[in-house]
Structure formats: structure tokens, C-alpha cells
Amino acid sequence: MTIGIIGGGQLGMMIAEAASKQGVSCIALDPNPDCSCKYVCKEIICGEYNDISKLEELGKKCDVITYEFENILASPLEFLVKNYNLPQGIRQLFDSQNRIREKDNARKFGLLTPPYRKVTSKEELISALDEIGYPAIYKTTTLGYDGHGQYKINCLADVNNVVLAAEGILEGYVKFDYEASIIMIRDKEKIVSLPIAINKHKNGILDLSIVGIEKPIFNEIKKASYQFMIETNYYGILTIEYFVKDDKFYFNEMAPRPHNSGHYSIEGATFSQYDLLVNYLVGKKLEEPKLISPTIMKNILGFDYDVFKNFKPSENVYLHDYHKKEVREKRKMAHITFTNLTLDEYQSKYKNMFKGEEE
Ligand code: AMP
Image 1 (tube, rainbow, N blue to C red):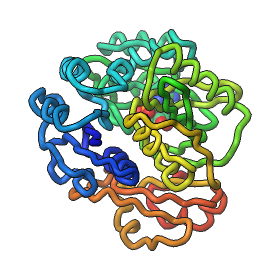
Image 2: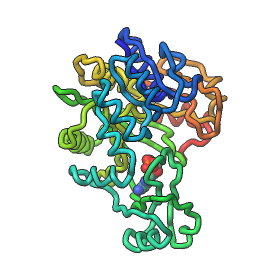
Image 3: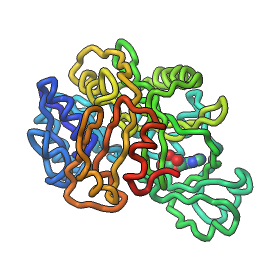
Image 4: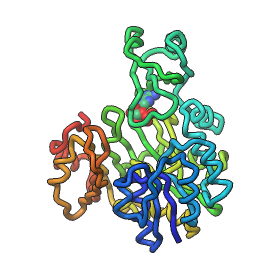
């Protein structure tokens, strides 16, 4: 059995690691022959994600296909779905590729979102600000990730700092208590989900995922997210990120692939998001994952990579290096999972070791 992965980054690498534990091999398609997947996949098909001939090669060599990368065009995907085995289908991927479409879809299927307006010009931005008020946040509708192309607007003068994309979205800024994410995996029988993570970001990039703090609202988040998965008729893996404010939770975005906030599950849960995705892809029964202990995942960006390289693994401290050749300041290079550790303990033991830590 071979799984084909579109994208050869760290998410693909961790899918392939989980697959190999089950005796399943993987082939990844990536433009970079030195991508993270190189270290675990039996082959890297070197090519662009939208190149039909490369997708065809992947399809022919693999029994089942998944993706760890979201920005694949609709037409190559349709080609794949028609001709090969992509059990997740393409609808959730398509729905997630544009922030306006994604939020329209979330609202249509019962989830609350921050207020938002489509923006294609400075005039539209100003009139959207009139309606939504301050603070607000401007984002590109497509190809945005980790805070790229985003501007917080606190007053009218801030409009001058915004570099407008051909199409953007203005969202009301939610002064949330915290951010939370749920990762669900659904097959024909049932939905299972990982324990909900509380996520802390720094400059728009995930910094810490904290798991093991139970909030009463998590039951409601789980119920609404399962309902969303069922009503949209999505299968496979889906992550939804929410902003939680008092007794409300606002849909921010979704990703139909494993998620950074689920890395903790490799050591922190009885089944990881990667194990469950592999089970889904190879048609094995899905089991409900359970948290093993309070767990914290710390993302390592380029500016902390040297600290990471000097870090020693020890009991309850697990190092994951993505083997990226090029180190860039804000590039995700690695992560550390601390099991059996609360946030207070993390802060007193480790917080000062890293730069860019949440204040
Ligand atoms: P995104 O790319 O939409 O996930 O945004 C990156 C991060 O920016 C989020 O995880 C939040 O920390 C922050 N952010 C984005 N949109 C909003 C919003 N509407 N209100 C408050 N914070 C936001």
C-alpha cells in the first residue's frame, strides 16, 4: 500500500512517519527535491503541485492520495478525483481556499463568524470600515497564511499602510479570550476528534498549542463542529480554528489537512492526527483519541533554530526537526512537544529560552 501526498513539507513528513509505523509507504509530490518528506518517503516526485503530468505520475504510483498543501487549483484536482483515489474529495479544499467563500460556507452551515466584507479597492475598504468599525483586520482572500498579507486597522489613518490585494476581506477584530482548534477525522462510520487545543500566536504565527485545560465551552465547540462536518458532507480530516470570547466561539478558518496545532498528538494522545488520517486513507477503523497528559507544543521558527539544535531530548521532551535546508527567521523549522507539563510549568522552566515568546 502506498499513500501519495501532494506537498512534501513537515505535515507530509509526519503523515509518512505515521504511515511507516503501520508498514505503509508514501510518495510525495513537491517542487523541492530536498523537502522534509525526503527523509521518510520512498520517493519524491519533483514537480509543481498543479502539473497534471506529475499528478498523474503520483496517481499511478499510489493507491490513495491526500494533500498537506492547500493551494492546488481546482482543475488539476478535478482531474485527480476523476481518475484516481482521493477519498477526501475536493470540496472542502475548494471551500477553504478563499476566505470569503470559507466564511460564507461556515455561516451557511450554522457557525458564527466575525463580521466581514469583501474589499477590492480603497473606497470599499473605507466603506467596510464604516460598517464594521474599529479595530478591524484586512486579509487577502487567497494564498494568505501565518499572518502574511494581514493588517490590523485601528483608525482611519491605518488604511494608508494597507497593501491591497486584488481581492481582500475586512473582518471585525475579535478581542478573544483565547484561540482554540478542533481536528476531526470522519469516515463512513463515524467522526472522531482530538482533544481541543488552546493556541497562542505571535505575530500571526502559531507559537504554542496547549492541551489539557478543559473548558465547558469545548463541548459546544465539538457539537457544532461535528454538525458542520455532517451538514457539509465532508469526509477525511478537517481542522477548524475558532476565536473564543465569553460564551461564544467564532469560526476563523478551516484546513482539510493535518494542522500545526495537532502536532502535540504524536506524543500527547493515544492516536495522533497523522495516525488517524492514515487509518482513514487505508480504510482502517477510526478509534477515539484520548489525551495522555497535559501537553504543550512549541513551534520553532528560524530565529530559535539554534536554541532548538542545542536542546536535549529527555523524558517528556520530544524534538521534531523538519530538516529544512534554508533557515529563514519566520520559517517553521521544528517543534518541541512537552508532555506531562502544564502551562505554568512550561513558563517557569522554558519560556526564557526562546525568542519571540508571547508576553
Ligand atoms: P489567520 O491567518 O486568519 O489564521 O490569522 C492569523 C492570526 O491573526 C489568528 O490566529 C489570530 O491570532 C489573528 N487574527 C486573525 N483574524 C482575526 C480577527 N478577526 N480578530 C482577531 N484576531 C485575528
